[in-house]
Length: 336
Image (tube, rainbow, N blue to C red):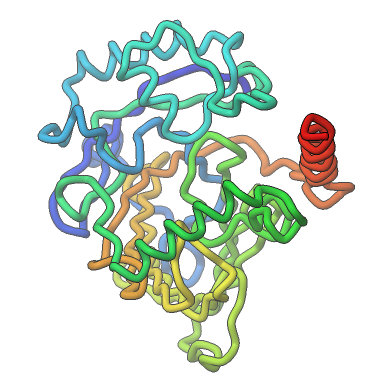
């Protein structure tokens, strides 16, 4: 998947948590939702999250919910020039941020090892929206509770002091356990395959090949004492929208610092032949002072979900730990 920065025609109706993105093809009235034999919308296939839109609205765009067509085109053009395959790889929101800032070059924030170059990364697509967050209206995450803020400061201090004393100091993804539910970061193996039956929906994530097998038959959640890395998901249909509620997270799951009390509600709505709206509402009274909602327009892909061989040797973990042992040895020798 080679980088070719493109623009995506997503026209959001920003406002409440029911925000919807539509494509031009659905606006013509010539498209109808395909359905499975049991009559529900057919969501099956591979869907990609390669949007360049940042999670939070940049402070420089504080009062700007949408960009003009000209501004979108200018950003996309600058990104094409900036990320021509020779710069360091840019992950997550950094593609949008660098293009918005008018950067003349891009260097990895990892000054120790750097990254491979951008040639190896997927297309990123620009749209009019300036944040994936649609609620709160300012496009920013809500403030942390006082307890969560103190815990975040303590965790940050620990990571700086103990980046890799052991494998347990590394993230769940570094350890090839899971990238978690949900995985909303774009542009890095951010593909999902949906498979449906009358009683279940399965969602395969490209990263580490996690598979969510979600009942649709009304069965209750697991006992509260049972906690899982990806939580416990249950789904139902509300009209043509698939609603998935996830609870029972492990205290080790840690979505952006969340606690085991995190509750996630996802709403999947197919609004065009190539667009599947993915709306996510996060509620965690231990972490955030209010719920918050994200809208991502997943794009239909003809690509397959490729192998992500994280566990096979996990050479990255070996390199991380051995590298830090070498740094400690060097630091000790310079003190002697």
